[in-house]
Structure formats: C-alpha cells, structure tokens
Length: 101
Image (cartoon, rainbow, N blue to C red):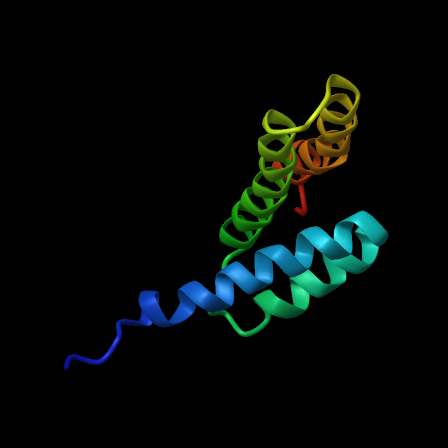
C-alpha cells in the first residue's frame, strides 16, 4: 500500500481548520483571525485554503438547515428552519469576502 501524499495528509487538517475558523468567527472575528494566523505559521496551510474551507463549512451547515425545512411537518416549522440557515449563509459571505492582508 502506497503512503499518502502530502496533499492527502493535509486534507483532514484543512477541513478541521476551516470549520474551527468558521466557528470562532461567529463568536469573535478578531480571535478567528489570530487563530488563522497561528495555523498559517507552520506553512502547511494557506490562507485561501483555510478560508475556502471555512466558507464550505458555513454553507454546508446552512444547507443542512434548508434540507430539514423540506421535510418539516408544517409551513411554520419550515419557515423557522429556513430562517435558521440565514446566519450560516451570512457567515459564508463574510468569510468569502474577508481580506486579511
């Protein structure tokens, strides 16, 4: 069995990093930036990679809420679930437009 490539080894780290940055950003954007810079210090991850993954994480969470809305037992519940997706989608837009330079 061949050994994993550097990209394959970094993929789980990247997914965890993006989700962690997204979660931290909702609580304190400045702390998220500090965390992101600490992650980048090792040189294994790039800022665009981590932010892209953070966007993916936020969008995925929002889409899960919308998916639940499709199977809601009544329109009121569906509307509440749709509204619960909004903060995640706003976070995705915020992360996608973040300029850390």
